Length: 352
Ligand code: PMP
View (cartoon, protein in one colour):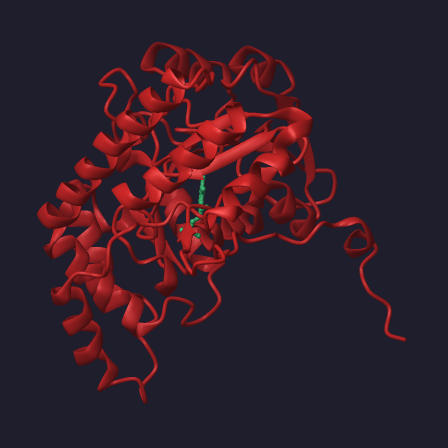
């Protein structure tokens, strides 16, 4: 029997959202915060065109996509680093800071990949409980020690949907020593409508330790292709680029991401429709008697405690897959109006 790393004995594997089907065949996957829309024809065309070259390795430096991201956000190319999904960029960030005794601080509950990546990197997790459904930034600042190498701030937070406003985030950043990386995980940035929630790109320029992490998986609808990026000052971006597995971002992901940036207006129209549905879903739930935290993302959060799995089972009867986090609550992605109606019907039944 080969000998494995001990941490693997206690590590819980990542459990992705799975589809379910109702007896009548209906199936609505609201468990992974994906875009409910089919890919844009222009993006599918770019992928088909790119497929002609798949006997070649991708551009390892992803030069054109780096240029496109830099141009889109008005940042120097040297500030951009790409990865195979933002979760891989997060893993690369762990690679840049991992050393014996290193600690990472993050809120809990937050994105399930943080503990997994920390364990894999041999970095000790310091989890700070949410205050209600929000980040407790004071408590997070207090646990930073000289062992802390990195802090994740998920804004808006997955799975609660809550977002941190500018004054609170800036005063937190002011309290973090510059030797500690602060990763602002903005996977859901495009869904934010509260103008007081700062765009991380307005914060990193004066702060050499701040990283903005973004993805093409959600608003841009490319979850299946795996492409994400980070923006930070040059020394951080350079360090992170060194940690990429050669050719990690495949050629179809690169062309699809470029085509998606070119079609951004259409994609952001879709985001707007999701935001409208988010309002409708939340208001309907509140009308049914639920407590629903205000969400700035493409999902809503119901704190169900011990009833979490029962609720997920009720939704499954209508073919609605939600994401249960037993025994805390359920995260439900905003989908098409039809999918949202199916979910709302199940939620109403559960309350009755
Ligand atoms: N960050 C957060 C907060 C997320 O919720 C997710 C996806 N669930 C990711 C990062 C990773 O997304 P991807 O790897 O698809 O870019």
